[in-house]
Length: 178
Image (cartoon, rainbow, N blue to C red; front, side, top):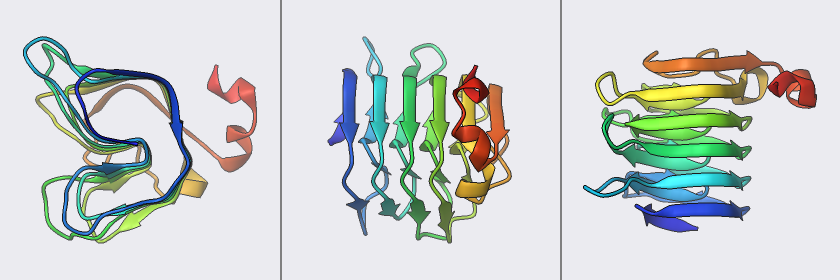
């Protein structure tokens, strides 16, 4: 739907597949969310259901988030259900069910259910790579361990906050997300 986002996107969705063979930052809804000196990218009430296949920084919803702790990007009330794959075996970047790579990001009430796979060394069910300096902060995040095929929420274990593993049966029950 969007290549790069520095502004706000609300009440949006994408259902088509996204494929890239040369660029980093591919997502089911947004390729890259960025920040400038005034604002950072923001997504609210959004979802993506298409499969996403790329090189590095590949996510079911957003491929790459480049913001900061002082001016973080945000994702609120979102989900991604498409399969995600990253073909590059080289760092940096990652592949995740919701976000491929995150630098300076706040996630609130979001979940991912699509299979995450590929040659990239940093893959996970929720956020593939979370920077340890420009943090990824999560409140009420969920991922389906069975469907994603991933035991870890964040590929390098640097998500802060609440990311809960669910099985496929639990993801079909509204009570699991409270």
